[in-house]
View 1 (tube, one colour):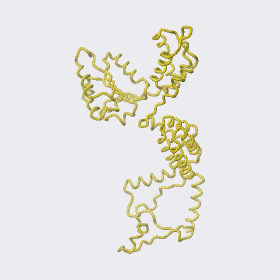
View 2: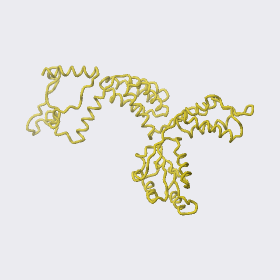
View 3: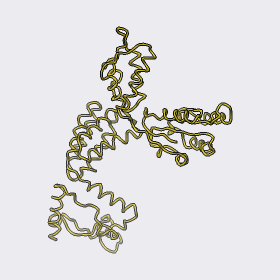
View 4: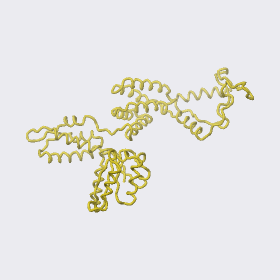
Length: 380
């Protein structure tokens, strides 16, 4: 089995439960520090009195094992000598070797809701009271605040509880657990974010899709998440892209405005960079939308990649070739020499004559351009 999900969502706990219920010896390795020799040492325990019912190997952070190390597990997976549970916080379909994936079932663990984490926090408070041997006076809102700021990470929440009980003063024979102290030990939400991992791509993807969906509030939320994690380049890149991909010709002025905001943000640095970026995000989210640009270039790229090209028309070739032994001169018609700066001539290669890549969007700006050119080209 492969357990995939964020930190503190219960992957290790479930592995422990499976080992207990199946009466197997649990051996744990972390791929960040483990080696092949560690796996061999575990295999050496097989068929001994130490592990009469077999071994369940829990390999944490399997994405840090290289291909050779992951392949070394295959022999023991196939002969059934060990039961492997591998865990990862990254998408296993990107980081786990295909041969291991094909022999495994992937279970995705979701980030826990605050109300679920609070149940664990309440239990932890009871356990800590027994451990320190002193009853606690817990102020209203403490458990709720710890749960809310853990971002679904139970381990983070339990660490906060332990720290609170360790540092709490005793008054009238009771530990004083206050909301102010809870806020102090969890000053920032334990938001899951890794610039090279799934959380990064999910956050910036949500930012761009919120811009595309014209939801300024959601866009600001995901911008805040990205900036809180210190990922200024990731936010800038997606905002710049959205200006051309999602707003495009419906409001082409968005491109220079957003570029100016991004330049200001990069010069200012965090935390001040949040201001011009927020301005850009609100502008893009509330601007009219058109995807005619991305649709047009994608159609053209698709044709080129499939080999639909052909020779460039003679009229468009390099003018310096005229008179150099060719059968005829270039024959290019200079549009500015004709009325309305336009003249009919072939621009696409013969193979693509009549192909349409760009279709005018239904916004005011592009429809005005469409009417202009239909009038001019209709007067030929």
